[in-house]
Length: 148
Image (tube, rainbow, N blue to C red):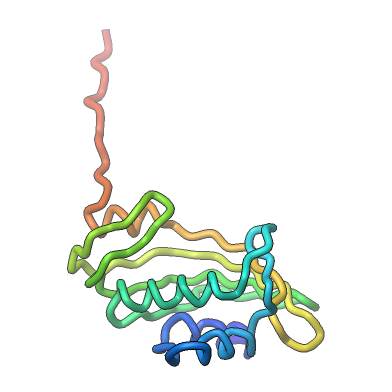
């Protein structure tokens, strides 16, 4: 695993220091502001998301599935998991704790400057799988049509 990816993932999986020290830790890896999926975002937003994730999931862990590096770019596919023990904020709303072990796939592409700092990230995550595992959404299957 590349150094920059390893340093970034530690921020998401290991407990963050209190107060401003967490933002300082993120500044050691990411620029501020940071482009996230093409939109500028203050780094504090990532700190808040990491804190929420670490609060909502017990034993957060990441398994890298694939990784690729090129000059100025680091891409990696991963599986993130943990036990859902507190409210989890998602784009669809807050998910009440389910107690379930949840796991979802993600893919990040880091844009990295010459100082080995992430200046932008393109990220996707399979949140539908997470929501289904946490019993926040259910698959509604329609009966098959009978042939005539």
